[in-house]
Length: 127
Image 1 (cartoon, rainbow, N blue to C red):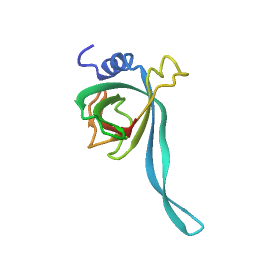
Image 2 (tube, helix red, strand yellow):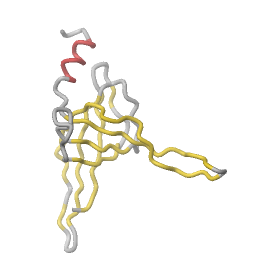
Image 3 (tube, helix red, strand yellow):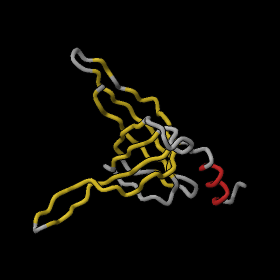
Image 4 (spheres, helix red, strand yellow):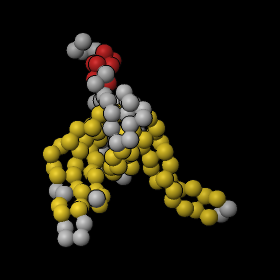
């Protein structure tokens, strides 16, 4: 299997248990008015979420701030750019009815390999 990227990619993708929708802000013009709107680039793409251990979340007096870094593994064929938004459905591959949704923003450029790509993301929200 080693030395055969297609077989290695298939083996890696068998471990992906999540699905994701990747969206990007695009410039659209309608009636001579231009505006930036989010557009879904990929929907229901298989992926795998890995927490990177950098959790800077903190409880403030009036709110609980969520702030942590993670990595999402995707197939190498997807073109994911810095600033893209990812809505990840946890365990969505095996359970399309999963209601566990995490929202991330891509930070930096993905590391793309022949078998997969590693996309660094940040979750910043209020709980």
